[in-house]
Image: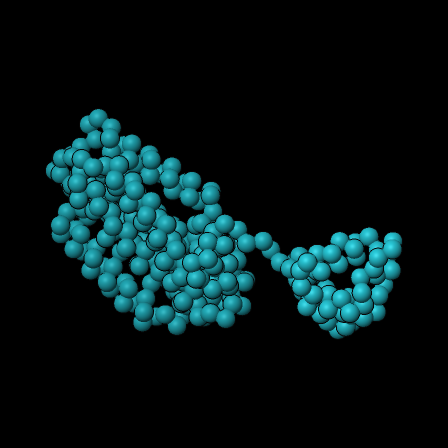
Length: 278
């Protein structure tokens, strides 16, 4: 090979200061010329070279960011927060598919003949979805990134709220789209919203004492029991269940407010709970 990269260009190349088009020419030449690669090794700073290899190893070993994580980072969410959010089970396709299936089933029941004046199945199931989503997003028994969350430089309550907001944003958004598929019911189809907030807030408030599995399980069971009792006391299919009346909505709003207050009062307990294996 009659031409070789000048030594001063090789020094600039090693420092990362060689500009195009000389950079492109050097890149192409170094791939085929062992002599120039030897000179490059001699003129390169070994400390800087080792640091470069370490950075390359770190880049190769780092997990690739998924679509959700990349989107969160693009809109301004911090990298470590985006990773904790993207790893939440409720943002996985299996969970989202299950939510969509439940909503399609309940909306279909609302359109079925003789379904009554209220989409009862939809209103009964919709509040349980955010409660289940939050339960799946927190705690060592259910969260695959629990160990990473424990050592993250983040208050346990703040992590809980970040995950909760993600769950509510996704699930309430899907519930809202399902509500649009029931236009004949008007605002009555939104009667799930306040019970959903009440159930989620109550489940969170009980989590430090009862754990991330038992607390939402008891709250969900209490909701089902309330609906069964309301169904037994209902005068007819055209009459809404008690939780979906004006009075019932008021009670749900009150429960949501009280649970949110308790959640704030006991927020420091989530740090103790976060470090405890259950």
